[in-house]
Length: 91
Image 1 (cartoon, one colour):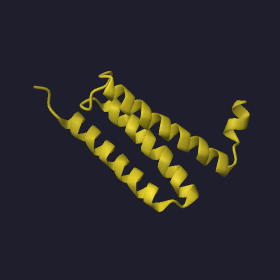
Image 2: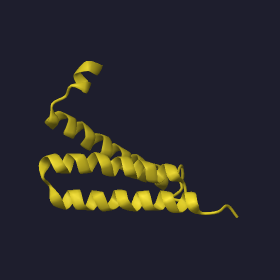
Image 3: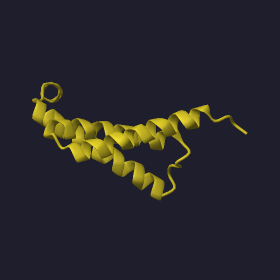
């Protein structure tokens, strides 16, 4: 089974990455909504980065440029947020 996953064709791998990205986005939002995660924590933004990466890869394969732009921007926002959080001095 692992061998089948590792050698997926480009279309299948793109689809898997899209699903991983979608699930990561949904988990981030679910956990935030349930107060299991806080937006001030890097984990929330890491889930968003994973979501963005997966959906960017899928959008590239599909040549879906509006989706690509939105998810690329979402990923950049998540990276910026993590940098901001890590640079912020504890009070």
